[in-house]
Length: 123
Image (cartoon, rainbow, N blue to C red; front, side):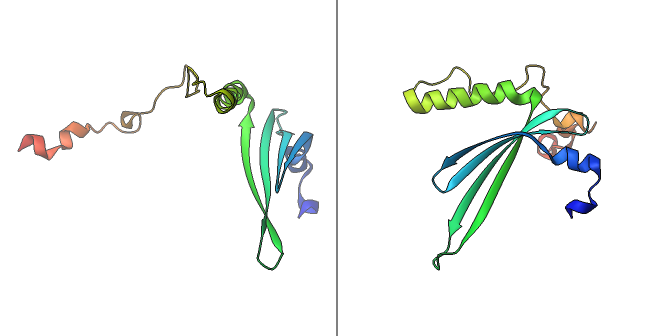
């Protein structure tokens, strides 16, 4: 399948930088990748061996993607969680999001007034 990929698709998947952490049966990979547009992002992959009773094993992988605009929030949350585990000190914040992020409501998607549909009030 790799042979049929365009040069642009290959570039999209290439690792720019990789670092790994081995931890028992698990290995964590931190890969920096680059989009076709030149934007860098991080993938974090957990690779874990699951052993069967006959001694054979299968490899499970779990991956998350971190984009540049989320790096600071992710790092702050991770720092707070690590500090809590090590010291028991509760962080001041437990939710990290853009201050300008708008909370979505049902009114963002429809002009139906749901209080008009409440039949119990009208009876």
